Amino acid sequence: MVNPCLADQYLDYWQFTRITRTSLARVLPALADIPDLGGLAAGTTFTSPASARLKSEVAGIGGGIRDAETRLAELITFLAALEAKYERLFLTASAERDRLAQEANP
Image (tube, rainbow, N blue to C red):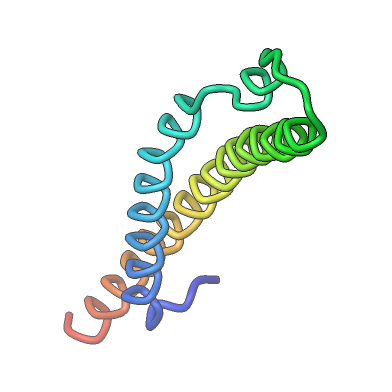
């Protein structure tokens, strides 16, 4: 049973999750466009102890970007499911609130 008194809160949550999901979805392609820094660093031919450390650090950054891309995609998927849940809750609570209002004022 859905509480009809919470319809406005469900609407707020639904809108918040939709706005957040769409905003994050716009960022995801930008992460995908970042070149593979690790691969670029590994392709350099300059060798020294400092360049080896730099290559290692840059490779770590490249891996971190790919991890962030994956986690962001997972978050977008989660928010889409949450958005659908709050949409259903809002629609159900609104219908129940309307039904109760009609019963109170026949």
